[in-house]
Image (cartoon, rainbow, N blue to C red; front, side, top):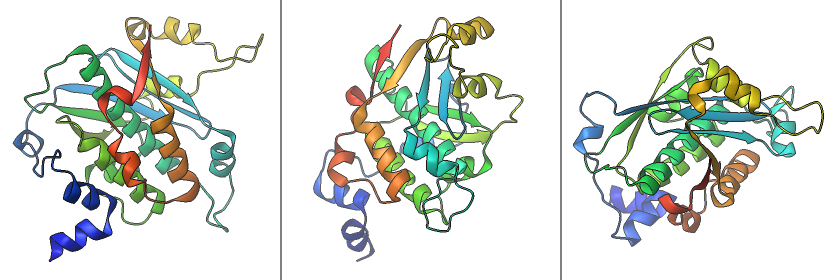
Length: 242
């Protein structure tokens, strides 16, 4: 009875109860303690976010839509519109995970051994929400459901741990790439000069399918659409550029 209720009442439960292509089990490699296969880093401010991973040779930068920025800068949550930095940080961790799924698929990386990635970030709430679950934030809980949708499409596991802001300097710099004074566009040349390890990495761009789900969650705090969750496949999460 409990399983049926879960299937009827949650987007994830609805998917797994109507689609037998999803495995209803967790790889033992995601449960037992073992060394992490890869490490990656993420960070966000109220204007933009970013992440990177030299193990899988990627980095990404994302400027947030103006409505996201406006609500992230509100002084209070009087009307329930405020977007917390905790939710933005969690979103960046999930984008990192989506990028890893996409890169492994595109490059033919062997993930049959169910590798687990460790994502470092400097936000304690994001760490807690990814490793266990969010109990209080509606946006955090909705982001968790989106994260579960990605987990169902891959054998890659994810854990998070906290790193100090001073140690998270590259992700911090990526998320705060400054505009060029000449044309107002974001200038990454200084970023690559300051952090040469990024030069050998491809630049990842999340596709609109994934981004639209994030914006809907952050703006309206609603659970992701079931049919859209089913579209989250490794090949349509983003694009790589050199």
